[in-house]
Image 1 (cartoon, rainbow over the protein chains, first blue to last red):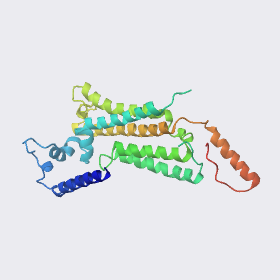
Image 2: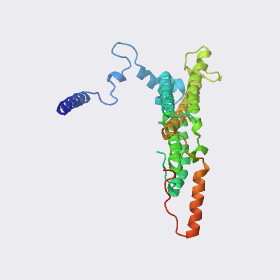
Image 3: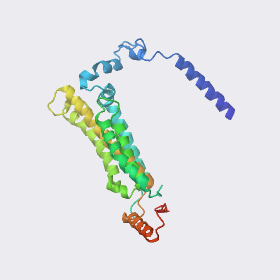
Image 4: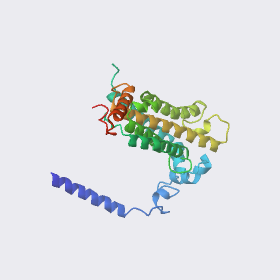
Length: 98
Length: 175
C-alpha cells in the first residue's frame, strides 16, 4: 500500500513538473492571461484592472483596488469566513459562566 | 496553555516591542493603498501584538490591553463595517459594494479610494478581534482573580529581601 502511494505521488509530481515546463514566461505579452481579449473574444478582466485601477480609484496599488473594489464581494466573503471561524471557536470552546 | 512563567526579561521585551509592532500594523493597514499590505495582514499583526502580551504576562494582566469580552463584538463590528459600506451604496440606488454611491460629495475616484479604506479598516478590526478571540477561547476562562499574581510577586520580593538569597526563577503561576 505504501509503495502504491509512493508510485502515485511520484506520477503526480512528474505530471506537475511536466506542466510547469510548458508554462509561459512570467509576464509574457502573448500569454493567455495577459491578452486584452480572451480566446472566446470577450475582453479580459485582468487587462482592464491593470489599465484602469488608478483611473477608477486613484490608488496606486492595483492589488488593493482589485481586492477591495473590483472583487469586493470576494473579500466580503473572506471576512465572513474569518468571522464564522471565530464564532465557531466561541461556540465550541467557550464555557458557560458558572 | 494556562501555565506561564512570570519572567521579567520576557515581559519587558514584549512590552518594549509591542508598540512598534502595533505602529507597523497600523502602517500596513493604512498604507495598503500604496504598498503591499491591507486589512488582513495588518489585522494579523495587530492581533500578534495582543497575543505577544498575552503570552508574556498572561491573559489576566493582558485584560488591561484588550479585553476578552471585546473579541466577538469586535469581529462582528468589523464585518458590519464592511457590510455597512456595501449597503450604504445599495440603499442609495447603486450596486452593492459600489463605493461610487457613498454620500460624501466627492468625485468618483476619491469615493472609491475612501470606500477601499473603510473596507480595509473593517477587515482589520474583524481579523484582529477574531484572532484574539480564538486564542482566548483556546486558553479558556481565567482561573484566579487578577490580583493573585501581583500578591505572589510581592511575596517573592519580600522573601528575597529577608533571606537575601537573590532572585530565583519562580514556579509556574498556577500548575
